[in-house]
Length: 174
Image (cartoon, rainbow, N blue to C red; front, side, top):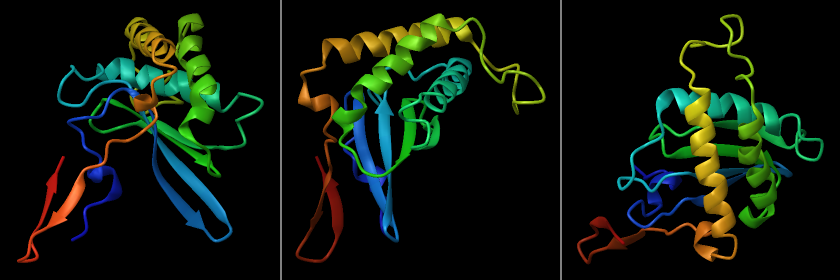
């Protein structure tokens, strides 16, 4: 069985940042999945679940209301490993093209007075939110992006290489 594309990223070397995860072609159209990584996998504590949920609501609302980008957004949601989010957009852009959008989105969390859609009629787990922790994680990531704006590592996935032995066995080596 083939390893899916997102598992070919070397998680021992990835840093927080904005990465192209995959590009899917749908006929003449393309959609791109971006990895918005807030935490170093297996090195930092993961994002608190309730804060992650709040960030999902706040930033999804921000992205889907941004006049320039709202028609391009297909999906914004958390990674199962709780180290970041996936953003799926129509078309193909370099991760650097999303820098200002995502910096502004994470900065906007600071101004949130409430979590949008955090009511029983709108949300499947409306009690599981933590706005103050969401603000803390958003500030942390926005500061990191600002400090590393000129660092190419925050835009380039470290790939694990698949090596094949003479006997035909596959293994990964970073």
